[in-house]
Image (cartoon, rainbow, N blue to C red; front, side):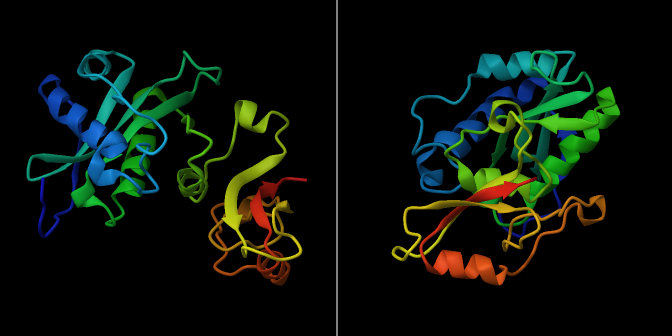
Length: 231
């Protein structure tokens, strides 16, 4: 849908009669031609349907799952699934977050962060969740960076030894002494746009606006920075 003069979205839980509209929204966001090439689309990586109306209907009807819907003028413009994560190898107070979709007409207004925050709040209210997990295709580095800026960290097989603070991908110049080399920074080195905690809880959520001098020099010489280590 084409939306004008976007009003503040209203959040609610999905009902059974939302199923078809949510299915269409999710397919457009993940596989639609209009979203192809965007950093938050999968259409360049995967083909075929993202989900099914039956799957969505089952999650709407489930006792341990909810679809959170953002809408304006009775039109869904974003959604996400939250559910108890008993089927995942996580702590019992952890919720799962997925099926995250935003309509093309509602991008660039900060809706993604608002939906994520709303899902965090609602999972805590519903189930007492103290953490949230999601799965992301490793090639979707820009989306992983987006989650990292909101406090999420690699887990499980992606961070088996808890050595990563955050994974990222910042490419340097096309040529130079470090071209083709990958670099991991210790998490006391500033990398613009990537969280830096420096081992101190007081810096939780801090995101540097500028690169450290050493980072600038490595990027100028062609290095690719793939993240930050905790040690």
